Image (cartoon, rainbow, N blue to C red):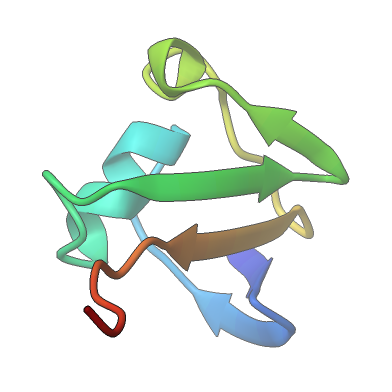
Length: 68
């Protein structure tokens, strides 16, 4: 299936949900914000949110830091 991920079309085989996409990308366990077709998806809905060919997904992960 082709997904537009962060503005780039990529192909993923065997990925059916947002949770599976996160795992495929190696982002498990990170603090993420995910937008699916223009809608922010709460963490608790990633397992049930199904993907379809041509979907648009934006993933941003929080990075701690700053100046003391």
